Length: 121
Image (cartoon, rainbow, N blue to C red; front, side, top):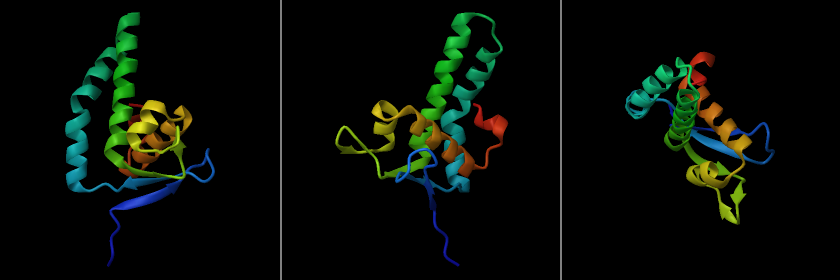
């Protein structure tokens, strides 16, 4: 048996672009949970709030969680340059097209085996 620890996913919104995403393993799952645990709990708490400040803080935490998913699970971007440089996960997040970043987040979460409700966080 041969096992590949990553999978290549073609972008549905940007032809010619693909993501290389790490597959889930026991150790990687533990690492991911450690990285997002406190942010996710705080985000859930703030989402229950009614004030604008709480909603904004929850939105910020949700964006940070998405960025963590991409930095954790997106190993490589193929077919994308940003300002003349080959795109990295960090460059995609900081200066790349937002729709492609959102697609990368969804692809990483799908590879993690998360449900639709879990993907919302």
